[in-house]
Amino acid sequence: MKALVTGVNGQLGKALLAMRPEGWTCVALDRSALDLSDVDAIARVVEAEQPDLVLNAAAYTAVDRAESEPELAHAINAYAPGAFAKALTGSGKRLVQVSTDFVFDGSSGRGYRPDDVRNPQSAYGASKAAGEDAAGSDAIIVRTSWVYAAGGANFVRTMLRLMRERDNLNVVADQIGTPTWATGLAATLWGLATKDQPGIYHHRDAGIASWYDFAVAIAEEAHALGLLARLPVITPIATADYPTPAKRPSFSVLDVSATRSLLGDGHVHWRENLKTMLKEEKALG
Image (cartoon, rainbow, N blue to C red; front, side, top):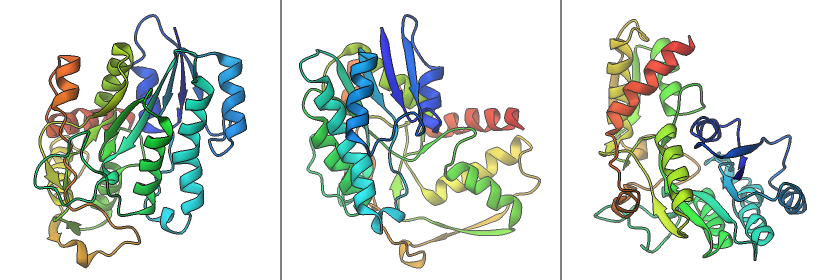
């Protein structure tokens, strides 16, 4: 079986390659090998490779910059999934499209279910919602949140850098969601691909947290591992005290019960996965 994997230089793409199940070969595509804003190039690569599965892990993820580059965000996050879906039409092959909690507005009082109404509040969220629509009903669409991995560009590594540079940090405490380790997400993507049941699914680690909670845990666990020489003072602040171009959902916890039921597995608490990631980060030096 052959899978075409995009975004292989990103943290999720690397995890997908590392978690490749036995019996699968992967065609690994980075930005230089496939420009996702070029729908004709997408059609050509699918025609040339004839994959059994497309795992589209690439995306425009610069949330704030998307406010000033909505056309580019839409081209990569919406037109590309549509091009993959079109290229696979009638072949019986499956597209796995990765989406985001940003398709929701954050007003829910419970975890968002896959069939809940979307209402994105940012250009990035709108582009990802359009990507879900473009992927179509034959695709496997997986929404996730706050993804991180050792060696990647993410909140954990940004916090580690700032904690080494500063004695005091301010971190937003009124945005609630769940951190997600890329390795666990990759395992779920492969698991859903193996089940081959199209639909919309959610994946995140167990538990919930604010960005402030996450930052405190990063400091404590990193200090315990010797990645930080001292514990910084971390002060919780409101979103209003840290304005950004793009509006973030204040509550974006995803209900993953349907995914866990289908796969017949559990999911590890985010703090345990954070510990594992930090050990990997330490091993990277």
